Amino acid sequence: DDFLAVVDAVSPDRPVHLVAHDWGSIQSWEAVTDPKAAERIISYTTLSGPCLDHMGHWLRHRLRRPTPRHLWQLSSQALHSWYIYLFHLPVLAPAAWRFGLARRWGTVLRVLDGVPPRPGRPHSTLAADAVRGIQLYRANMLPRLTKPRQRPTAVPVQVITLTKDSFVSPALSEGLEQWAPYLWRRELPATHWSALLEKGPVVAAMIREFAAHQEGVPATPALAKSRHGRPGARRGEFADKLVVVTGAGSGIGRTTALAFADRGA
Image (cartoon, rainbow, N blue to C red; front, side, top):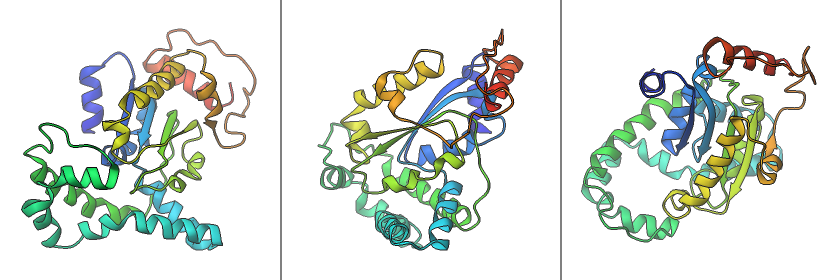
């Protein structure tokens, strides 16, 4: 609700392109999978932050079908998620941030992600911000993973998979077509934080290409190659037919265009 209120304030007449990373991405999925999202969000680019409900279904599917590949994926993500277990430790987790970890965060980034120290970082508010972040994990992780909801979306989604991410394994995006049929997957050889702090221009170029395509610009060869989707996702009574909707930039017109697209046009 807060996100949609901000969108209404800053872009009342046009839908927005949404980009998010890490926990911001996890939170943004809540808006993207809201039924009102199709009218207010024209595209979503996500890095290193799956929808927790989708992840809950991802876990259930692999536990029900324990093939060697599925078991490997489960084991790999369990190792990637080591920090989540620590965040659930009462007293100790907040104390770690307050009494040392925040001050040494620059060293952690350098050792784990290869990000060199930057002037003015980490910010003086990091310890307090991190303690509040731990509360987000405790309030959302277990409820969403153990009791996942059905969270589909008609918003076009671009997943930028960081192949060297120490926290989110690439396999987590498998099966995402079930929930986001208009899906593009792109890979970037980057770590969790270096994608933004070291390779920001590359990420920005991917976002520009994707956003422009959703606005009607023909897809670049790289973007076209990354298109994925559930087989038959765009079939329907208007399959392979051209529909022209005037005044489709927002409101009723845009919703009408999306409804035709959902039925194959």
